[in-house]
Length: 330
Image (cartoon, rainbow, N blue to C red; front, side, top):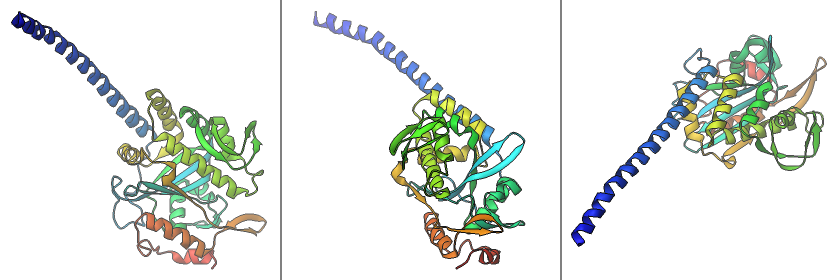
């Protein structure tokens, strides 16, 4: 009797094991499809946004950097670009990323900052993009900070609305109550959709800090996008976001570099993103308004960024330092 019962259990366990095997096989197949789809979406979108670099490393580097383990710098350009017009870089942010510390420093350079633009002389820094596109903008920032730019990401600000919507909105801190372009904002933490996010970064005249205040809000939105964009859990949202990335973003970072950055910073928190800003002095020359940044102030910020990038203060000294001395006063 016992033998019959035991043999019955063994015979019944075989179909159970087969059923479990089939279920696990199906789950594994689904998981594999998801991984392949995820990789495909990232790869194809990255290729659509990819603009191969014209040089393998920054002139401020003695050797190439390894994106998987070395601290790197990126130039983020927010361009107000319309059909038939190259546009101007109204948002200029220098990012210093350190994979060992798992943190990011964001430094906003006001668009009206008076700088030396190679082969064009002294002018507002945002004119560098209008004069020579991304390449000249990169060289201008490198000359101004005397630090390398290892890559760039250019965002069409007209597409910011659709990008934020694809993310499902973003969370920001509103510094004071204001209304702009049909959107109302209230002091404190607030969830913004795409239309609100665009209005949030565009408003300037109602801000008591003017351009400086707008720069802070731009950094706030960029931080929120980085935080939300590196923590996808939904394939639908990923697909929507990647569609917007392929349309609204251009970069000289290869698909592999983008994937590496996403893996390095996918769990980054807002506490690990630090915003830096310059102390500026308003000046007017020939009836044109500029922000002047004094030499010691540039050196203060540069020291912080060089430490984040693990660079010595003498490792990136430029050969054309005389231009900088002619521009920035002590």
